[in-house]
Length: 196
Image (cartoon, rainbow, N blue to C red; front, side, top):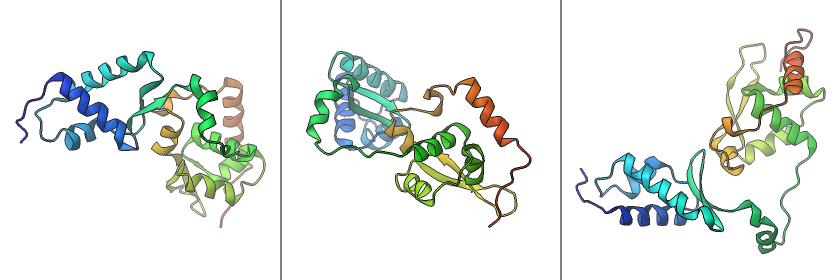
């Protein structure tokens, strides 16, 4: 059992440095159980230290933000026009079909490929699903109990981290008209899951 004591200032320094060097988001549990394993530190003190670090960076060019899998430092979005010059290659462009497919998975998860096709009115390319799986933005979380047992897709923590979201509740709400139309299309009994 850890018995070493640590001052609030030292605690903040260690947590700040750990998040800075980690290279990926660090959860509160990782901070307490791995980074601070040698110290007698309560989760309340970890939370307080994180709040103080966040407050410290409020007026800086970087922020400490919480995403789905933990905390990370991130440049302010308002600085993107200047910071993007550091990476001359352009970010990946995604097709409308991929973005529509991803949106349906995000807002209606878990959802099958057949249900996505039912709403979009066109077949979903295997390449789209493959791209989303390779980026680890979606994953198969089970199979629907219908003939053919199609895969059920849902988003991942990697998706939430990429878009700087701590949870699905941070997504903007889907306009009511679109939500109603999707529900109407998904409840159409004339459309059935394709059996393989």
